Length: 324
Length: 307
Image (cartoon, rainbow over all chains, first blue to last red; front, side, top):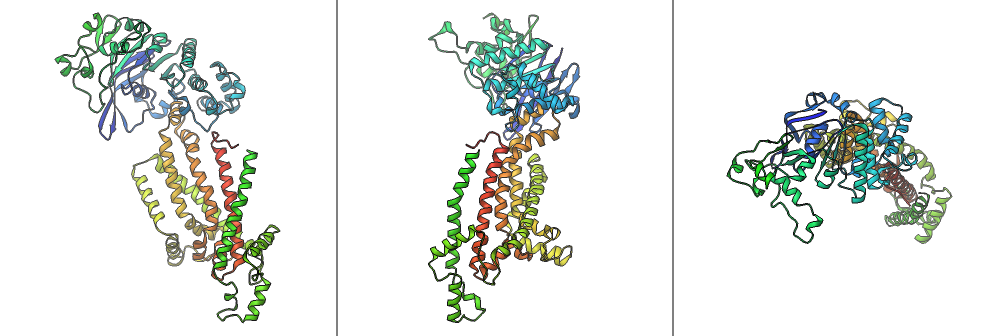
């Protein structure tokens, strides 16, 4: 396995107490495969990704347990300088808002070329030539001229392409895309997703796609991990989860997608709000919002039950959910 | 850009006229400039009248102003009452003050920005609190107190430096006065840099720079500092004008014969031509410094374009 996260725990010290953002997350992704991590904001999906990348703000964040195995080495045990050489070169990250994620006072060419001068020790001239190549590869028209422009001179879609180009620069083995299309127009979303999927196939990279958009997931992902309150509540191959979810939370998410064949009917919504991370309910964290909740859910935290050969569900009543 | 500069230059004209007129009128109501001319005694009426005619003081104020401004544009700032042309006074005073200002600005940049970056990156730690307290003290204590205290300690008590600057005003003599002159602005630069750094440190593009695997030093200098210094540069640029004219107290304390000293003497002796002349040049310095700051702003931040 290319990347394997094992029983990761991350917490934040806040004014209201300790926020337990990640509580025992385990997931993995192979080369050439796509893992979609699904969940509401505050479910810990981004914090997990930041921990994998090694860009978590410490403090206030603190890794209290677990391993991040990348090609077998535990990244959490590396020294910062070793870790740095992994970042950008071996694994790269694409962020949600390309406008704020790119440096406003440097040209996109400078920001792309930097990857080559710093990690590969290239001359500025060669690095600049590679920057133009990269922009061509992510299909930005007129790359030769536009390489001298600043981020604000690009459209949202083009900016996200630059983010992708920057992540791709050193042909990393793993890319983490944190809601890469959320800030874009719907029409542009598909183009950017296609580009990302094409590049992934071309270079046989592992991709972790963090999203809350189930529509995007269905097209590109191989596996899905659904997160809730810092835990993984369901994992499954993508087609199986759409057919029959094994966790009431996943079911809720799927039911709350607007569908053409249900036009005119009231849209389903999961009742209640996600819990505060400083006061996660005992037992199953989802029980206050769960239609299947019983006494045992309020006291016993469900483990990730094996569901068939390929799936897992952290619900005491996954059978009920699956066959409902 | 060209059109913007032209527009800004044109806007300077009314500001320039307004500022000089104001100072001209203020100097005029300060009192009779002839009165102080004959020492402690009052001038005899005949001499006073002759002097008045000679300096054109018998004419109405607006006419005096028009004549004066006319002369200024031919490079003639008039004569001080001691017979020295004001331009000659400026020729000796401005180089001294410019030297002093440069030293002060260098202090602001080197110490202010360094402390700002240091504290901004370590917000809430002991270094940060200490520097913050120190800047608060510097800001609250008036310059003449800091100046006199340092003069007394370093110059008189410990004898590290000469307590008074010679008429050459060499650079090494101006180091302590430069520090005193810079002190308050330096404290502001520190705080401004600190806030700016601390704010941008959490920004998305800094996170991107870290995610790119850049060394920490490069993340800070190339990505964080470049963005954080935009407001600081603006402040320092504007401050240049203020330092040039605002050195009155510092120059008095250390006996530096610069612009502030001449202005002080001019006001004390009701020397109209000197005061108005020096202030006119300072107004110009201020206006040009402001324009340069605005242009520099566009260079530092490519998102800003003037049309």
